[in-house]
Image 1 (spheres, helix red, strand yellow):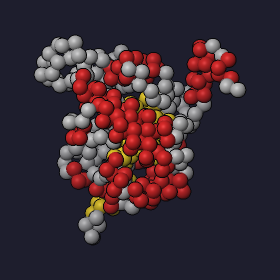
Image 2 (image 1 turned 90 degrees about the vertical axis):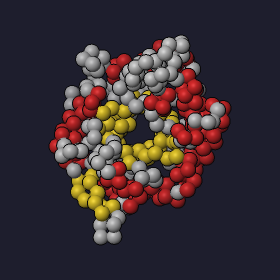
Image 3 (image 1 turned 30 degrees about the vertical axis):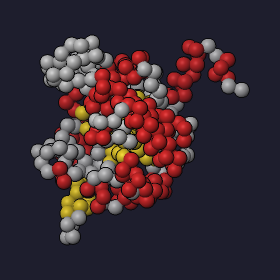
Length: 347
């Protein structure tokens, strides 16, 4: 008998919140083990050993349809290695890259996303329990200068704040929604017990979630947010908004699946990166509104040169005698994160 059916709605909600609160806190690290150069050359076993050494129990990584079909054996190896170390994987499913999405209809995007998710989840059912439904589609859908809002207003400014549901281009929003819906449907068709995660690029982009949840009733199990140092204190955004409390309106667990100091250790800022990660990890672990903290990312990526994501890693890499990227040293940020994962919860 399902006892929840015998309870009034408010009691069911309270029961569910208690169950969510009982979950352990999730420490994670991001990486790109099937998609980017340094991660291809550093052995998977070494990557997983570093994740385990850091005190994290999750390894989040992007998994496109192309990467999965071309490197299924590598994903199998990654999962087997994670299980050996009692780590969990969090794949970020990308069925339709931006370049392909441009000329596709929402119906085709949804069908392709559902088929891909069903295929990959079927393969790993019961072994991978959580699936993130693409990455930062709010940023893809965001209105741009010269476009019109849903209500017909010409947008003459730069980047929108993202809190207004109308500041998302209607055509791109419908395609983003189709991708999320298709991935969710495919995941649940293959494994009804699996949990789905929808994320945003962070800041105040809750207008995107507002449309998904309140207008279109798009289902998902966990809300994820991304947060970087230039955004300030997530509990006092712009000096006034406690975003963690605000996001409770969506009645799902809240995970931070990307966080770091902007630019990481770039320009000799290794100690600043370590301080940011150490401080925010302790602060947010103690916040009952946060259920997970995932550092972005495990390894530096020197292939990006002086720009981009070259210095976000917890670990530096350098070329060996054969010209291949290998582990060079653990950065101060690695030690700061490890100390946070081992520290007792602050009251």
